[in-house]
Length: 288
Ligand SMILES: C[S@@+](CC[C@H](N)C(=O)[O-])C[C@H]1O[C@@H](n2cnc3c(N)ncnc32)[C@H](O)[C@@H]1O
Image (cartoon, rainbow, N blue to C red; front, top):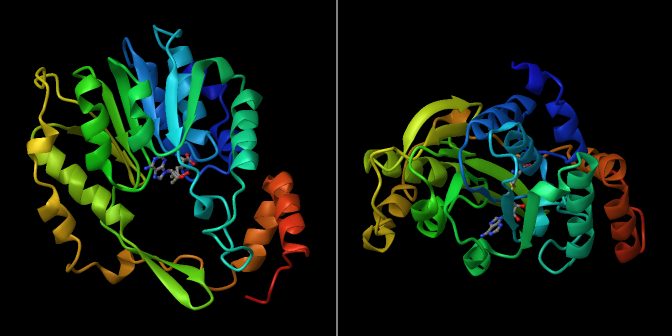
């Protein structure tokens, strides 16, 4: 731990922003970006801003503190509403509340001048980045082939590339009372990441928890034609494949409703109140 990172409380960042990664991962993000060079940093998957804040702290500690984090999020409701029974995940629009929360979180760490937020799908908004960029953090929906296509050629050789969910696992989530969601995002991310490593487009330095830390190799100085690459075999490879039983965490299937409501109440009281208004009743904990 460096002197500077000792003064940043990454547990506080995680708690304040309901961060989905562990404090040690946020700290590693900070370190990686504090060594990045000239050019803004792109993040796909802001959520409530925890990693965005770690990136911004990294920039602030770097030799080029005037740079910015450009972060994209399409505000998937399921990432913000933990309990499938509380609302219909697909129809409710709480985006204004989410956006205010994200801005408040970033301001709470005084990083608002270092962050540019874009709300919407990255595939529609990417042209707001005109590069060159000096770092990439991918933590969205597993389609990292899309994100590489959008940003890789803007990335300076040698720049850090961080990819979350880089593990060969499948997840099962309770989606509604009658449905279990099979989530292969991590498998897809892992397989596509291996594909890029095999192509010589990505070098691994280390993994923290299930987050990949690496860089664009210095040797890749010419633009890469991603349209000429065939990703279908990678997508196909996740259709029929075996996963270790221990690699299939059962997501919030039992007893999670009370936890979700409690999380909403304590971490995001504004959102909790809005849900109560929309539902016309208190989202009470059930026996689960
Ligand atoms: C796992 S969360 C990110 C967690 C965050 N990095 C943290 O530290 O807590 C993934 C986010 O990616 C967003 N997302 C998914 N697909 C996207 C896309 N195509 N464009 C922009 N954002 C996307 C979702 O709305 C969600 O908020």
